[in-house]
Image (cartoon, rainbow, N blue to C red; front, top):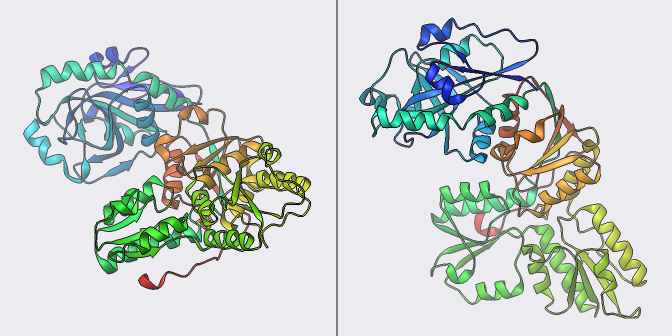
Length: 488
Ligand code: SF4
């Protein structure tokens, strides 16, 4: 935990910020020669004040957090913890934009500032880059509120900007409190599995080969970033096949679909249908049909409403009972002599299903299961990696979307090992309070979460003091699935 050293150029800004603020004066010269008050322990420095808007995107009173500082002579300094601070400011109700700030040597009027907006620059100030040069590796943040937007004048905007400054201190305190030396342990394997890689590649190749738009029934994989990225490339996501126009190309998502949906696809010969169902999900469907053909009642261990489960239930309509936990086993209305079989959703936690399978075996002595555990290699490997790491971490962060089953299971596995664990969609969802006292942070990612999000999280943490990064690998993965004929 570091002491917050809050710095402003003007006394008026310091008054708006409230509390202890060091006023260094206005302009590059003052910033370059500023001497911060001595401290007995680690400090985190934040420069806060008003600034001129450079992008039409920012309005008077709006808060801008600098992701990097630029100067007119081309120097750039990245501020990697900025995304976490921006998220904290949003959490306390500020309207925030995150992006580059350019430091200029003299006051720039709106017409001059409009020319500074290249490369996504949001605002211009006259101190931050030069103050940053004096700080070495000290964690540094820049928060500016817009006084003079490109459209508005400085007087009314100045009042709004000072009003905006009054709100930022709690977020800066939270940011400084999270600053500490830290070690990150990356669990491996993590992130994309072979089924997800295949599904994404199918959509990308379909767009290349058949042209945009390519329609995709439901989320191709359960990750909002993947979906948004494919949308940018030309994919259109729909709920049902009836939403797909005549003659279009449509991809069925990785979690699999029921025979009913396949029937709907077959009834639309105008559509070109490409099936991205993961082969490991198809294997479970095949097992369901095999057990049903043997006259067995099937118990599926899984989570109701999950798309994979809905698809598997549809393989044997009325012939499969879904159980979510041990308590559901007692409620199954079958006698000991009923021929029974069980299957599991591919992405469950191994420990959890082991308990349910044990309860099923106790209740139905003759029950049979799949030839090998249905929990897929990727779910198993990611859980094993988290399990072996969790007890040595103060906090485990799991990257992935909340609707991703295998991601949610990773959080549960870490918690079962007694480790605090949180699911984050990306770095912007990391709550700075979680990091207090967390000297060792484990990071994993669900099978549908891109590795770039993990690296974004590591980069954000690197802005919060010295960071050591190590990888903790429990096994290698080399599984690849072949692509459907249409996109080979
Ligand atoms: S998590 Fe497993 S079952 Fe799901 S897509 Fe990946 S490899 Fe296939």
